[in-house]
Image 1: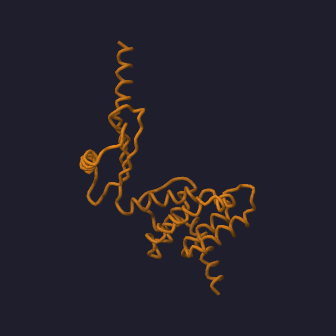
Image 2 (image 1 turned 30 degrees about the vertical axis):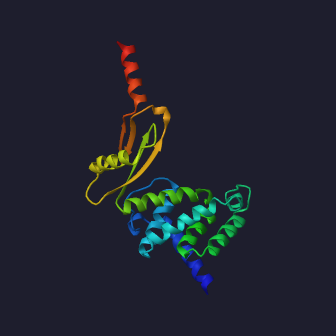
Image 3 (image 1 turned 180 degrees about the vertical axis):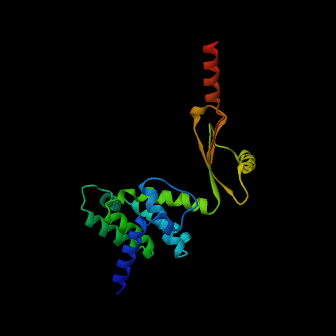
Length: 209
């Protein structure tokens, strides 16, 4: 009986991928591409079941499973039969005691020959969840890692770009090639204040005069 129930949920989830957008619970942002369509269907299904946070956590576990060389060597291998990939992946997810909705996603991807898109779908869903929580992703690149004082000062400055109810999800990385300064990307804004770019602009100006 349980198997029949899961099978029905798989078909329902599969159908939701191609339903008109009006029948879906729309995510706060639209992610384009095939992975975006699957992530949107998942967001809608999870939202209706009030399990968005749970599904997000489970997808983190799916990501960890995919990193297992033994598992990824099968499910991500284009030369392995689709049925073998599906059974191997689903067995691993069932053993990990993941919920039917998360297992259904993998089933649909497997049935459609899209298992290699699993990481992309998870990333797309993560973006939707960040927007759902009012998080604004900000990427900051500096020549050297920022110390705690500079990082705190930077966060205060970046908060000035936010609207009411939004919070910063800060991602920092270092790249010695920019020489100094920083490159900031927040929402749809991009500001290059790196020393490297300043030198390039100055060099171009000198050559043109």
